[in-house]
Length: 387
Image (cartoon, rainbow, N blue to C red):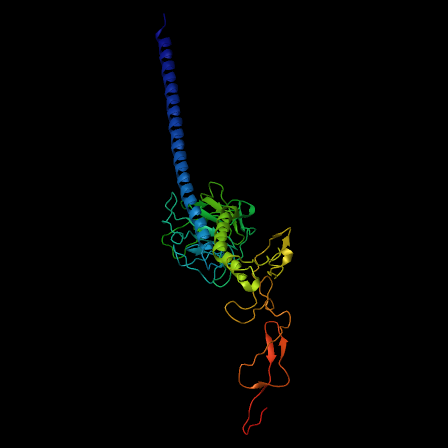
């Protein structure tokens, strides 16, 4: 039979066991609650990222469509050009003064241009990310107008000059969902900055929206440490945009250039069987790098095996729309001697009335673009004499 002392020990042991069990239950409940909160937070993060991805994809497709639409327009001398950002921040983080609709600047920088996505120019509603921040936008040099009077040269082998995640020439443009403002901690490729934002911001600074970038070297990132980076970025590459540009150019060739080619030799003066319905096409210009040779002149050298192929024969001799000889330059199709007399034509002079032809007989000399002839005529003077 147990005594009172032994019975008290058992009761103490049972109480301690209950406390341990309670502690286990509390820890388990806490773990479950924390894990659920983490799961909920993770779910919200996934929802936010999915929403941003949809908005960024919409902006990307609209931007590519804008480039293609402009490239297909008659009179567009810079097919393939991208819109400049709306509120612009150049390499020195300076800003423009026009938000939404594009205003072409005569002093657009030659470096990468950073600014807000020009949603009005692209025909979009104002797109915002999951933090209600408007999208940002970066354009590579070579794909934006440097000034309002210069032209771009965009070909199938033109590269984007933006460096992204350490990869050189990785993109033509970037569209960025900036996320909420954060206190950016210094890390590899990221400069410490406590982002401060105000809307509208008369002195908007891209560094208060985009982390870990350097427009001086055209270097950008799509990922970074969680303490330094919360942007979501989509890139536009040459492979993304070039098929749309090429399709637009093909449409313009069909509408603008093919009729000119069919009309060069389309009359019987070029042959008995030549007509508008049965034209003769000019020879193609032999393949060559236009930046190294100025020859766009058609030549039979472009033909082999009965097939003629090469560059368009777009040589011209006068300033377009004038009779003034053009001035040759490297890479230009100008050749002031392209249209010229190659031999002296046999002059035929017919007197239809007036003075008689005198001596010496008419004579002609050949210049590059003209034939000059001298004619002597006898005309009556006062008193009946003739000279």
